[in-house]
Image (cartoon, rainbow, N blue to C red; front, side):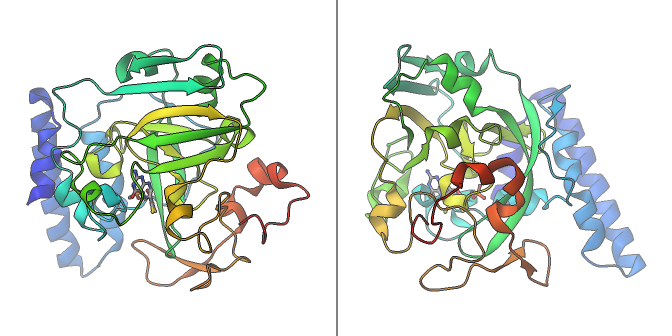
Length: 320
Ligand code: MTE
């Protein structure tokens, strides 16, 4: 129930018909599917429908970095989430982030630290100069599940270059909004708040690193990290910090919220690596959401060609 309300809540009036059409079409296809005696497959195929039907972003460029794998369904992408600011269960964020972010105030992003052109910006102004693209990237989580998501956003490097980092800028630290009223999970001490993540500057400047503002053709929902989140597809999902309000250039390696919570379990690099186990479980296989059988996990989540060179000569067991 909340899910439907949430999606409609984002629609402009003229788009509602499209959404109804989508639901009707979906009901029709569901019935047809039952009649044909076929289960999950056609629903998977439908995955691309909702975004297209309610598209906010028109004429988007498709990124050459995209994968051509089957998409994870829109329903799964928007209801099976990790976002501890809204609860620790996978279905909590979709239930608890329906009013997030508070649209009555503009979302502000601070860019500061070791750079010559720091600033504080309204999100709309911040993203205006950049080319929005659709990038279909895998997301692989440390608990062993993965998804393929049609993200919408722009290159992180383009934004970082505009801030003119100086020679002391060795790392980039990202912070999520701290607002326990809007994010009730921050009233608990399950993690150190605000949620913090970091990248080495060359990782941040790599063309795969991406700031997302939408997915499936529309704005991000609260549970997916609205209005601005990082996507680093070769790293475990927890590096992809959501609802960003601060980007800071720093000299020392940032300490992420997960490194504080479990230093033996979560390292700074967090590259997807089937040969480096989590202390409590193997990372060699994963379950693609929507599929029954597990598949083998690939080094750097399959993006070795694009990012492997960043780690030449490093012991990836030590720098996990
Ligand atoms: N960002 C914030 N601020 N808070 C979080 O709890 N969870 C992380 C990451 N970003 C998290 C976060 C984890 S553990 C994962 S796996 C991904 O978001 C999941 O992204 P998704 O829920 O959109 O699939």
